Image 1 (cartoon, rainbow, N blue to C red):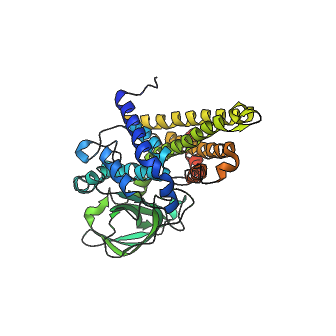
Image 2 (tube, rainbow, N blue to C red):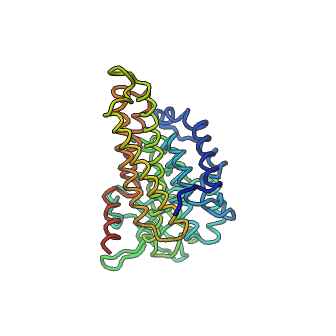
Image 3 (spheres, rainbow, N blue to C red):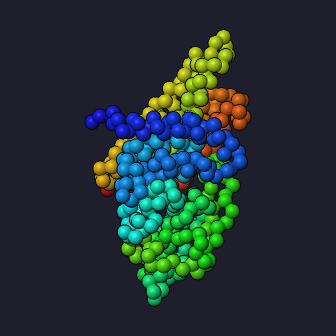
Length: 380
């Protein structure tokens, strides 16, 4: 076992760090304050190949691996968590299931331009009354004689939804008593009957727009069915395994940004005859945060390495997401405490990291759901 990065991985990490420092970090506070979609940054991420990193070049991807994807997502998220999750959704929640389950037509016409960043994708599983218990979804699609589906229902909290050219929508397509079958459908906003609500006003990741979607007899042509009929729920769950690696990476970036600011502030802030970095209370907060951040990174890289090998990684992705997200909340909490009253203001940016951190424990599987996934594997 070794922990050294390859030359290519080191180059990707440095490229992402330079890009995030120069182009993203200077405007991150503005994006958050104005809840402005980062159009120019999304375009630059596309040029760098960050919107389709671990996909074959013949399908529009950058031909990189998932370890590189983790490294780049952490760097982008360190500068702006909103930009980090936009990158994560396009890679993990949209392009990945298209590569695994898409037809040749879908890969050519939808996956390739999306992986290149010419279009964006989104993932629609959550509903107003169906979150963690996804089996209770109400959105349904009825098969028509020509092989198309007639879609009715709604989805909410769909990250990138207002900006996406395609969204993977999961809908009930058959019932057998109490059992239901789900199918994944690729839906475009220009399809008649598809309505987008205004983007959500949120506590954090304010520049990564999300919204509620409504479907009123939306006709989805048969070529827009993703995977086999009735296999949608399996596609949804398998996709989230990879998505959780992206969110763990986002949490790493948020926590690292907060910790770096806490360390710099502790060295400068004078109290009790010297810099507060000399105080044991501060040192212990810094030490605990550094240990937890390093541990979370190893868990995340392990999950990514397993995915690169084609090995099952459901529990490992859940572990990475669980630990990294809860670590992120703890680290940003401590970093704000190190700053004292200044941390509570907008001047130092700690309150932004603190707000952004909280969502990582909720989306793409709450911490409670992660514990269920981990426990099932441990007890099997």
